[in-house]
Image 1 (cartoon, helix red, strand yellow):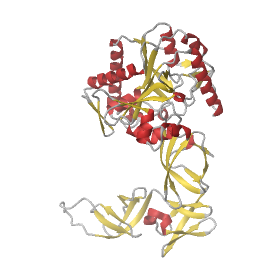
Image 2 (cartoon, chains in turn cyan, green; image 1 turned 180 degrees about the vertical axis):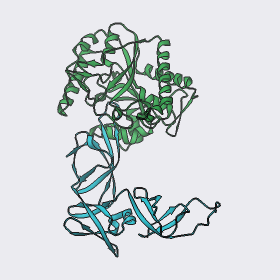
Image 3 (cartoon, rainbow over the protein chains, first blue to last red; image 1 turned 90 degrees about the vertical axis):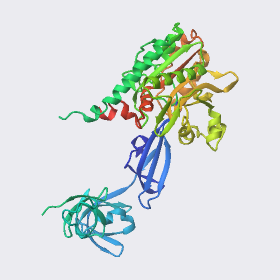
Length: 187
Length: 307
């Protein structure tokens, strides 16, 4: 069980039966008044944002989430298939529940699948993934007139800005927390 | 080991903070106040429902120097001030540190209106020392220091800024929530605001207003939505003070909080205290305001997390 003193960004609690993650939190205390804990939370199943102000003494149940390391197998229509490497059990997650994570899922990628009451509700990705560029415009060497980045499409279909020197077929590292280009993978 | 860059980067802020504190001393010294020092570790903090002291062996770290300072008044000191550290358990946030620095000043033969005048002159003096002109910019607010500053009642703020009257807010137990969510963000935006006359239940050491005993002669100063100072006309009746303390102790007991011993020496000496007024002003927040800082962390050398 958590108390208001445990509230912080990233804490996952159960509220009205659903798992929520705290996305913003502020301590307030009007002069000589009681301590108030202003909390903004996101429902981890449907994404709804909730504002609640708590007083001292309130308690919360942790969100009963299970995390299992799984391997991404393949995508079929809007459904993503994963397998637990320990017991070969397979599960599926709908594209909606994946959010931006779908941009980085390539075959065999290891991710942490988040389960709530045995239903997968999302995945935690590695901070960096390597993806191959499948389409980008050629950059004329010595061209200094253009901008310092250009669009590129990677093998998952995700489009991002990359430096001009990146060519089709190259492997690049992307920061999954920001969705931005990080570096070129040599070799 | 590389140098502590975060601390090194605070040099300019900490130098400005030192200038502000030195200007505070100059202001009070010139006004004929005596700077006093009272013990930080005390046996009996003032019993207040929502202020929690940190234990220190069998005693406590002070939550405010209030009681020892009033004992000075009772012993004939007419004008005193103190800059000291205070501790309040569990208070940590953008505007709160569990250990912070407080300025308190007390003056005999004065009431809360005189303190409001003091605040106007003090902040004006500091702005002049820092060459800020007569406007302070804080978090996007252009706050004019031209006097007089806004003075509104708590009841007026509730009916003006919320959907509830003060009486309804108290009855529904929504006072603090409405104060934080609806009222505070609107205080001191174009010019500083004194919000005055708190419900009698919210001023355990304040005198009730003679013409309306449902409210206490207590005010808070806000600038740019930031709560800076809390002042009041002092309650000087020992019997009434004791019964208010008992009420606060009962509140604490009901909430399962530590019940502090009755501050008996203070109550005994209160008999000799002349009519007076006193105020506490948070120095860290004052520095935030004058330097336009977003978080209290920016204006101290170390936060508890950095120790």
